[in-house]
Image (cartoon, rainbow over all chains, first blue to last red):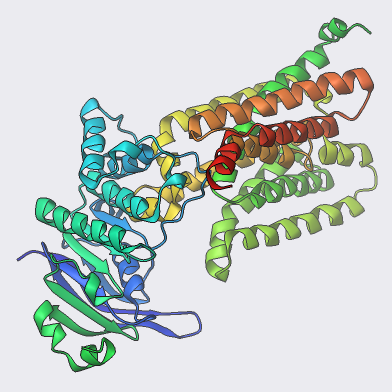
Length: 239
Length: 276
C-alpha cells in the first residue's frame, strides 16, 4: 500500500516553549479516510496545517506521497478550512472560487478551456450548488459555503483532502448533506481524506480509520472498531 | 479666464494626463488593499515614501528615488514583522507607519532651507507635474494592467483567501509581494503630484465607493479607477477656477462620490429589502 502522509517525530513548540504537538509519528495509506477526533486543544487543526505546510514544525520530517512538501505537492492537497465566513459584499462569485481549484491544478497562467468550464459546472451540479454559480460567495449559507469548498477541491482533483471541522456551525440537514457529499466523493474519487470532527455521530460512513488525539499527542490511531474499544476514548465520549 | 483657455497651457494638460493616469493606478491598487483587508498599508506606504523623500532632501539624493526605496522596503517588512511578532498585519503596519512618521518629522525639523519642497511632498501639486512624471506614470499604469492580465487567476486566489491560496500551491507570497511593490511604485511616483498625505485617500476612497456598487472584481477595478479619475479631473478644474488647493479639492470630491455610491448602493438596498 502506498503512503499518502508520513509524519516522523514531529514536534511543534511556541516561542514560549509551550508544546503544541509532541513526537507525532503517523503513516496514512493512500485511499484511507481518517476521522481526526479529540478534545479542544488536542492539536487536530494544527496537524492538518502541518501536513499542508501552513505551519512549519519545530522538528521532524513530513512526506506527502513520498515527497517533501513543495508547491507541486501542495497542488495535490485540497484544503477545506474551519472558518468559512465570507464578507457579505465580497465581489467574488461561486464560479470564480471553484476555478481557484483549477488554477491550483494547472498553474495560474493557463487559460481555461470550454472543457474546464464544463468541469466547473458538472462539479457544482454534483455537490448541489449549480444554481448558485453566479452568486457572490458572501450570500451563501454555512452549508452552501462548505459545499463550495468541497467543489473547489474536487476540480483541483486533489489526491489528499484535508477537511477541518466541516460540520461546525451547520444545522442537522446541512450536516447530513455534507456527510453524504463526503461519502460520495470518497467513493467516486478514491482520494485520501482526513476529516477533523468533534462529535462521534458526525463520522462519515466512509471513514475506515480514526486518529484520536489529546494534548498534542496521538493517543490511538487505527481501525474504527479498535479505537472505539480504547478506555480513554470511552471515558471522554461516554461510550 | 475662459474654461477652454486652460487647455492652452501645457502644465494644465500635463496635470490632466496625470489625473487620468494617477486615478487609474490609485483606483486599481485601492481594490487590492481593500479586498486584502489591509487598508492601513496605504497610509504606511505613503508615509514611508514621504519619509524617504525627506531623507533624500536631507542627504541630497533624488527624493522620489529615495521615497521609492523607503516605500518598497517598508512594504516588504510588513509580513515578516507580523510573523515574527505574532501580531496582526494591521498592527505591524501601524508600527511601521509610526516609525516612518517619526523619521519624516525628525528630518523635516533638520531641514532648514527646503520648506517649499517639504510642503510639495506633503500636500503635492498636480499642476507642477513634468513630462518626465507623465512618462513614469504611464509606465506604472502599463505595468499595473499587464500584471493584472497576466496574474489575474493568482490575484483572484489571494484576494479570496491568502491561506487557501498558499495551501493549494498557488505562489501566494510571490504575488502578494509583487502586488505590494507595484503599489509602492505607484505611491512614490505620485508623491510629488498628489502628495504623501493625500495619496492614501485617493487609494482608499474610490475603491470603497466601487465596493458599494458591484459584486464583480473586474467591474470593481473599472468603477474604482473611474471614480478616482473623475475626482482628479473635477478637482483639477474646480481648483483652477476657484484657486482652491488641488489635492484637498480632489479628496473632497472623492468623498462626495463615496457618499453618493452609498446612497445608490444596490448591495445596501438588497440587504435592507432582505433583512429589514
